Length: 106
Image 1 (tube, rainbow, N blue to C red):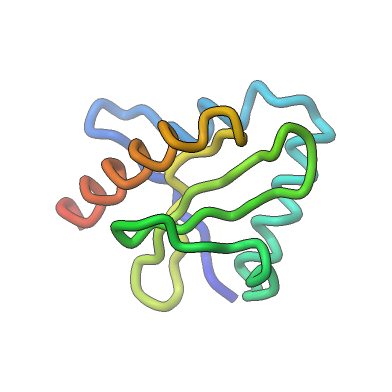
Image 2 (image 1 turned 90 degrees about the vertical axis):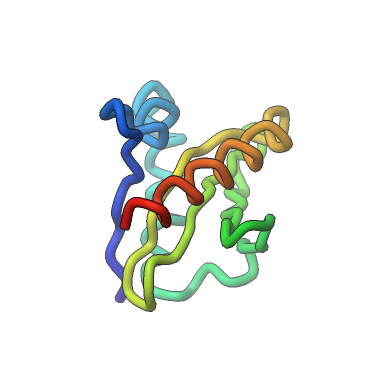
């Protein structure tokens, strides 16, 4: 089982939580279930690489939720940020930027 880490900016912001926390309870539960499956290696059909070492986890619920993450070694998943289909292009660019920052500082 892989562990989860949340990316934190230099200023202390946690972009994933800024997106996730305001969502309604049902959406958070669905997303959490997909993340749990991700840690177990059971979400492969919902994952695709988007570039720069970043992956997209597609959530089959709501407005097409997406969770962007990188893998630090073989045992740590770093959640970068989330979004939905409408912000996908912008979110991917931001996730790659966050991942580059994470790799530089770890």
